[in-house]
Image (cartoon, rainbow, N blue to C red):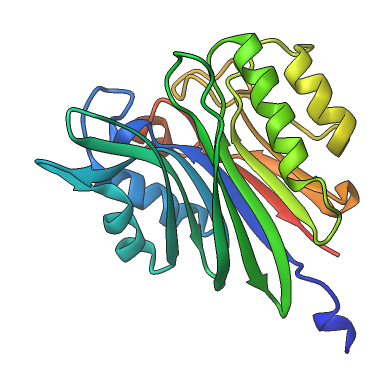
Length: 235
């Protein structure tokens, strides 16, 4: 095998909480979210708070998939009034398999993770897109479950999503850092004047992650209440 195909890199990945396509101005617009995705031009994008169709409700993921012309998979988590919501992954590369991880906690809003095996440059890569809960105890339980699910060492792992952790030294983040090592965490929320680093990207092995940045275009500041986070991964 030649050097160019010895691993799944280089790769650009991103995570984006699209807030059900409701922008920071309170207006619903799938077109604005689609424009932000095209601006980023990432190979793999994890999405949170994605409308997945239902009674009198558009399947936003389907519209976004057509716009960016990538493979799409959904990870349904809950429904309200016949409207389905969840996580999703868009990928420029083939998706070999998907698994839905139920991370619901007590009577709290149902949460989950979308676990996908993606075939990049001739190699399998495991990508987990998630959206953690609002309470500290909830997040700790969810991270424990995630770590048990993918701590196999069989292939490189990328964990990305909205972790809803407001405190820099919260126990949720400490557990993730101990597992993946520390990574840059620029602020992504709220979109217009970001203060909190709620959206994160981790990779194992860590040394391949070479650059993390917020996509803070004019459209990104309008399209959702979160800004997208992008990571560049290389050999």
